[in-house]
Length: 151
Image (cartoon, rainbow, N blue to C red; front, side, top):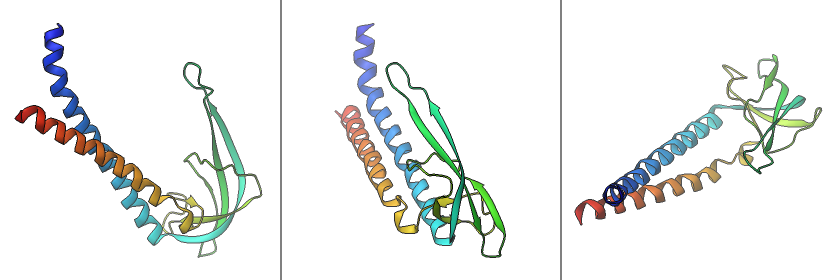
């Protein structure tokens, strides 16, 4: 049994690094491209937080868990329609009812991809670090795979 592990692990581990790095890099690259495309076509307006749903998720083991905030914002579209949109992505920021916010929205479907904050505050650049981390895993996996199969 130990002999099998000595033969299989050195082959599977580099492949796992390669696959993980590829999928991680691809996923975050697609996310950044879509987010940038959205921000280019999105309209920006002012809105107000009208509700905040707070959910606490229990952690595993000794972890305290985490608290997630899901604000609902009201804003007026460019064509004069008043819209209430629940932001379905948990935000790290804490929002209070009545707080003014900047809203980026899709003119065709205002609640589909609504994002809060001005364009400069969107963390698109931060995700480049995640792409780089995935690329490092990919390079390690490819190098390791190449050395495992060639040598």
